[in-house]
Image 1 (cartoon, rainbow, N blue to C red):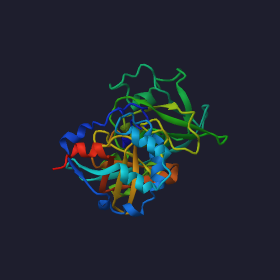
Image 2: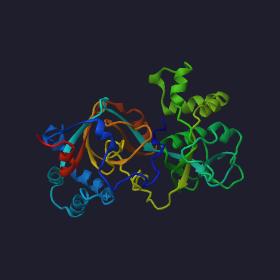
Image 3: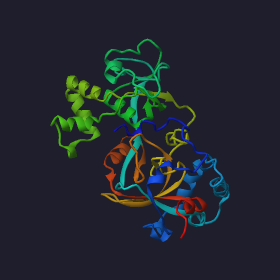
Image 4: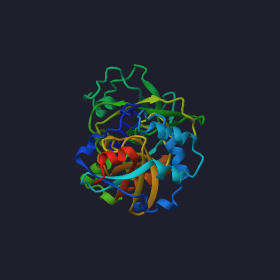
Length: 346
């Protein structure tokens, strides 16, 4: 899915206020920490460290004192969360749904060759924000961007390149072993269309058979029809080169800070403020209860109980992420004053 479209658009969301538009039409309940399944067994120290990564960006009078205390906190991490927050369950009437995403790493080169021939483009200046531009098919088939010096690199595999675009950020591993880190820079305004869903629609596979490796293999076995399949997704993502993030850190999220595997959540900021701790109770094949931090967003992450879990970098993370589509619930931790303002006692 174009799940990650908008992943690294930069610090584009209002972090200076705690007004959350979606809460006007949602049911809000304040819980006790004892209501959170597994809370007492969590690694609160690890969660607090991730919380500190973006807390200072929350320029709001209800968050600033908490962030100042967090920066200097040396006591029990669990006590910190229990002292300054209250768990708030937000219900918009839709069942909880958790998916996952990752940072792809694909092979490529700074220069074009017979092996590396699929361009990775910067955003052309004339692409209109919020409006449709050329489709993927026109960009790739007619090569409308050739000769303009917009190529950041050249990818080896068109399927891998499209998967990188779907995630919205990633790395290109160069022949000398070094890597280019890419961040989201914009897109052509066309809606995302799933390659897997299209193969199911055509009767090629059943839904449970479709995965990233299956799509790759099918396109390679069927080069003509494979190209048509890739063009079925009209959406096209442009990138920017990210040079200031250390190789051992995660990609930049919506708060313009590195995100952390298995601790960062992409959320709908209409219901969950960016930077807030979120208690997740994920069910499904690999259930877990964990304190996450809302540090990212995604165009298809919509709703109070909808979230995307960041699983890390590379193929293994991608394989894991692709298997996640699970029910559960999420509970946002809000500063006490803000929590009770949403649900006054009595």
